[in-house]
Image 1: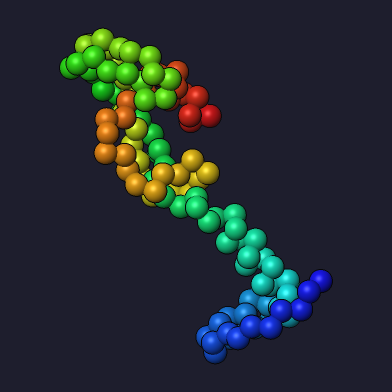
Image 2 (image 1 turned 120 degrees about the vertical axis):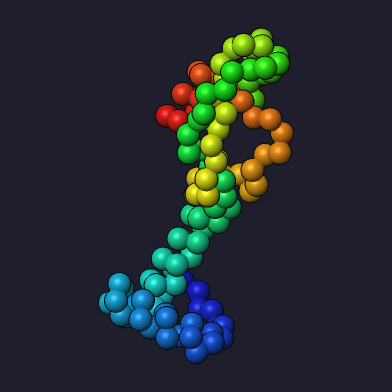
Amino acid sequence: MKRLNFTLDEEAVTLLNELAATYYGGNKSRTVRAALESLATHTGHDGWVISGYTPTQLDHEAACHTCGTTYAEGDILLRPVFERGASPQALTSIPAEEWLDCPQCAEDRTV
């Protein structure tokens, strides 16, 4: 263990005391550790995630975004529907380029 010396504002001290008392039997060290672990788990994972797909009939030749296979006009590919969420695969922004996945890649992504 290592002793750290840092200053917290009054609101942070109150929150630390409340969380420690409620969840960790007053143990502030365990409370801070749990907060840091939670932050580490979620850092970089909030963003845009695929929540589903919409079938799209191609009006031009296009390639699957994931595997790169080319499909002809008239074929059906799947356009992802994005929503805010947390995931290791979360994107920081919704892609500006056309994104279409073939049925196999869409199925693999949702598993």
